[in-house]
Image 1 (cartoon, helix red, strand yellow):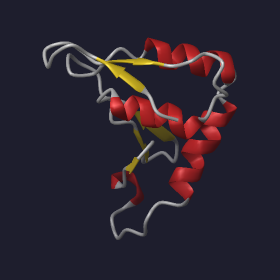
Image 2 (cartoon, one colour):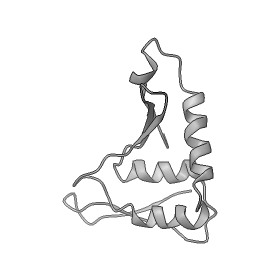
Image 3 (cartoon, one colour):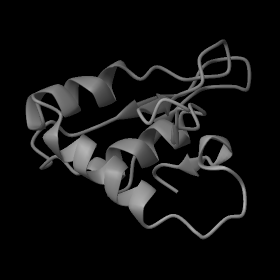
Length: 107
């Protein structure tokens, strides 16, 4: 999928246009967040749980259309969870302790 990124100049937050009839795809969802400068990723907490990360702030674009697309195509989040865990399970080998490993999503 190619996202239509709409922004008129560098001082405006980028926005994405998503055709709502497009079937939901978790990789494309996270790729869209990446296009909007949210830099999504995941890492494992010391207690064994997972923490999904997305940047926030003035440089991050408007994510509302992406989340509307996700909410309509993956309302229970099953596809997104499966994608996130698959990305974690296939991460490159590292000598770092697991709680210091970070896997980018949508890359």
